[in-house]
Length: 505
Image (cartoon, rainbow, N blue to C red; front, side, top):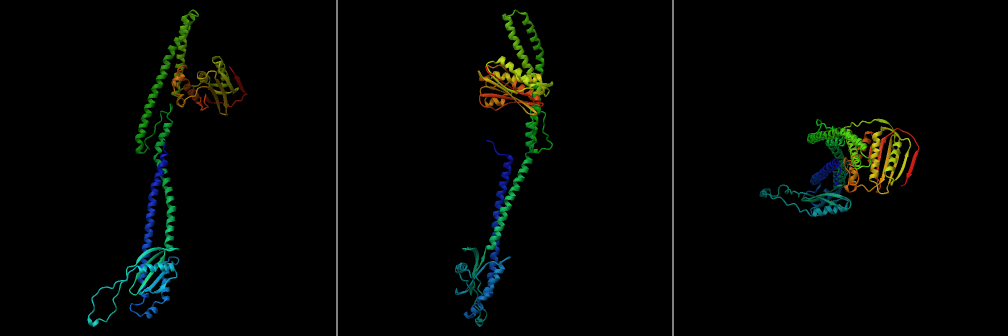
């Protein structure tokens, strides 16, 4: 299974790791900030609860005086001051409930629901216990103020009403009970602002992390891309390619050194093999020429129709076949070395195609031939080599055709190139054979080719000749039941009439 891009995975994993860290950090920070704000609010509540002591009536004072000392206007003023004290730019909603020692209401805010919550929490707080101290001497028993009773430490809780959340602090003094509730709307708005900042900044940070990881991984993988580029250029003519090690990261130095050594071994081996095939072809060329000449001369001296003449004819055919193989090997060795020389002349491809058709009519009269090409298809090329390309293609079209099959020849011309398409009826070529059909000495499935002459050099040589002309030879992906080759050659722009011909068996 093919994995996604390594560079993309690095970027996504970096973004995921950074995202997990940032989300965790943001959540912890948000809760810490919220707790800090609540703690500061509790401290202010405690301070204001303690400041409520001067507004309370003195312990032991008659009720009528208590009523005068704690009249509602005083508590209203105190509540207004609390609203200003807890507010920032605007006033914060405050609720105040004050009860006397007997639980009678001295003052309460207008919000009934919050007053009910304050009363509930005041009822849960026990009365303060008097301090223990030694009794005074008898002479001073009725002298001095009554003992001071410390209030219970207030408890702070958050309660939710139908409209808002409130932070409640309540405590009991010896002579009264006080409860204060602060609306948490301002705190919630500040926390919502902080949350929105996190929601905007975290995705932006993740995007920057992903882009940074993409760029960093791209820089780290640059030697791999460089190595891939060199590998793609490693052809017969590119074995001298080497990757410089001087500007490469330490982690990739060993890999590049191993690759350079492999290229060096391949170049040396290929040079030796190419030199051997070329030298062998040169060395065998002269003996084969002499042998062919002697056989032809001897063949003329024997009696016509004799058994010796038949044997000499067979030997001469094999020598000629061997000479053809040597010529192909010599051309291939020259092509491998990049030294295939072309004798460029103006070649009329229409004329060459007509000559090939005449040969097909003599060699395979049982095949149906259909042609569609123009007159005067001229180009600059090596006539002899182009004839050899066409001979190889037509020879394959005849050898691998079906009984009573067909051959189609057509051309397609543009301003710069000429496409010669040669198709024939045939059995389907397996995908594995299509990948290796231009390999040297490869003939595909023996079940299909064992009765067909050849050693597997024709198509390889034809493609090398086409590439030497700055063209190409390809096997097309066509419908089942046929084989199609396309020869592409650069041409000069010429005109001509279309020539159409159909010959049936």
